[in-house]
Image 1 (tube, helix red, strand yellow):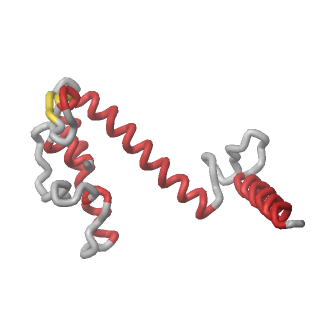
Image 2 (tube, rainbow, N blue to C red; image 1 turned 30 degrees about the horizontal axis):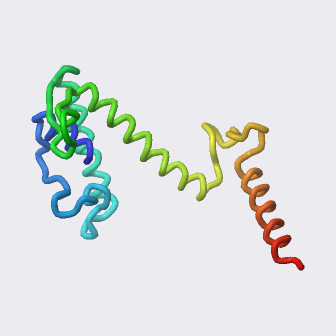
Image 3 (cartoon, rainbow, N blue to C red; image 1 turned 180 degrees about the vertical axis):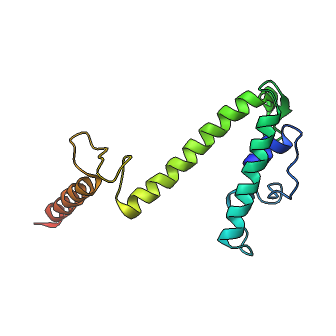
Length: 144
């Protein structure tokens, strides 16, 4: 569920716009509807986070809420664990996007000249080495 759900509905600070209907489609909050364009989707995300920021600023860390899509005692929460949960969620999903970006542009690390490889090679050099090794292995396996 998006930030507007966690920092809105859960904490009784409802987001003033309709949220994705996850009852009808459990993945609705992960996919933008086909009838909206990228700018509209990004504007929605900006409004949802602005609402979340306002809720976070207005409430104490001990503000109580209930996460209806969680089960059992874990569903009864305060703002504090919701913040931790959203940091973890953002980290996990941003990490997924980072893997895709690395595959697209070949860059890793904090700067273009930085390397995340322990031997100091750049990501491009590392990928080239892995590719060369894979090709050589494939050639050996097809040779008589």
